[in-house]
Image 1 (cartoon, rainbow, N blue to C red):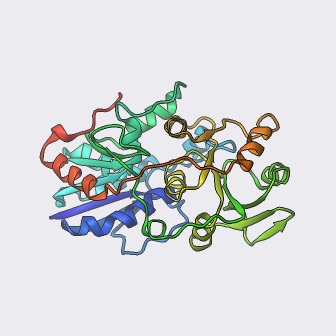
Image 2 (image 1 turned 30 degrees about the horizontal axis):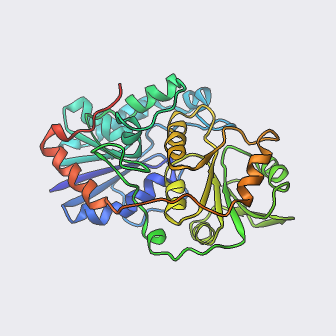
Image 3 (image 1 turned 45 degrees about the horizontal axis):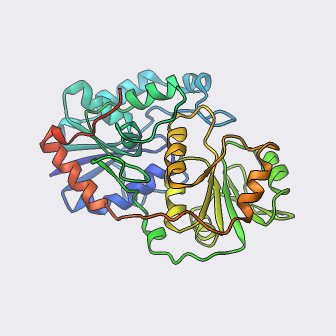
Length: 337
């Protein structure tokens, strides 16, 4: 079987999941890889057959999507050219991890595309939803990667076709320890804000940011540049994690039995849905990080007990469901439209 595996490259989570999934997919057939976007800090360990510009969203200073900068950076003619040039008819199976070039190429040519992503689970009927409206975010998650068949990943198996997170090998094989530091990864906040806020907190903090070029130590804070090896080491040896309400990092923190505090990006539909799911697990969620929430963060820092999280390795089951869905459309995830 010839398989096209198309991956969204605008974040580390999609690529880390793809790296873990590829060996299992290659047991089922010959796999060609497509990556669109270039905002990930991860390098991909195998050859990439198709490298596309795709559709890239620009984050605002407070998180979420900056509509004006996103529109300014869009290249619709280039995207259409990439869609029309992609030979999806040459493949027996097209799998898209929320990747738009492959999904639209399949839609326009009547080729089956199966979405295998966290976004598929967020959209699934039965998954936790934010009570807020987020019209732009809801439209994007419905239309960015069009597909009728979906298999998803979430913090829990909320639906029949939703599976537990895929945990990369570096995390799943690690022996976690409780160190003296809290790991902080909050891309929606700049260095000056993080410095002013966390120097008021008890304990030591290792703060990772793409804006930091070399390690800087200021009082109880250590600012660190993004790098896979150092980040993973500090994650595994942390006593807790403070981060946005994305998917992969909170899932890894829960897997490692770390206490967790999440702050969803403002104006970000998916992160607010994730926050609802994490609340159900007992994770503390704050919607602002300022002097009004300072006391809550201090109490969290002093808390010793993490949330009890039961995880199951369901990667093989998820891949089985993808191949079942390719043969029988009734295996598609029910979605909220």
